[in-house]
Image (cartoon, rainbow, N blue to C red; front, side, top):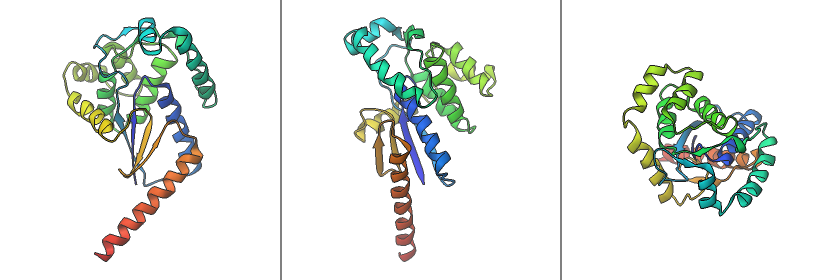
Length: 219
């Protein structure tokens, strides 16, 4: 069974959605589930250096008051998952291209999930600029990477086109918001869903797997 999760590292609901998925898997383990984290950029036109946070909130939400109301709702949801969002610490909204590249790089070492957690925490709990190569290197080192290898990787354009390609695939699939959970390439569930909703998709995907095997055996 395969699960592709489209997310962005500056999306608080993606952080919440990851925690809820982990709760679902703790309650109902899926030993044959292969999870692949896929890139989606909420701000694909963001310049590499990012932009001032207040300017971003003005442009995105029409002002800090509207953003503050949204953040209150996110904080409440996050608290239920043990996440203490510190939005006031965030001073810049970054480009997420390099962070997505690094997450993709981590997949070959089996460290995607750990690196994602570390990036989410650096941004949402500590207010660090995760568009910075130095910050990304710090975060990667904390989960087991060698600093020199990460810095060298980030100095190249490796995986940039692959990341942009994942974003294009998501948009062709009609995904406009994240997180979005796609099971077996066929069944999609959008939003930071509670475990009960994920359980239903686990069952549907498993039935789909069984049907596919049955049809293959009859061929």
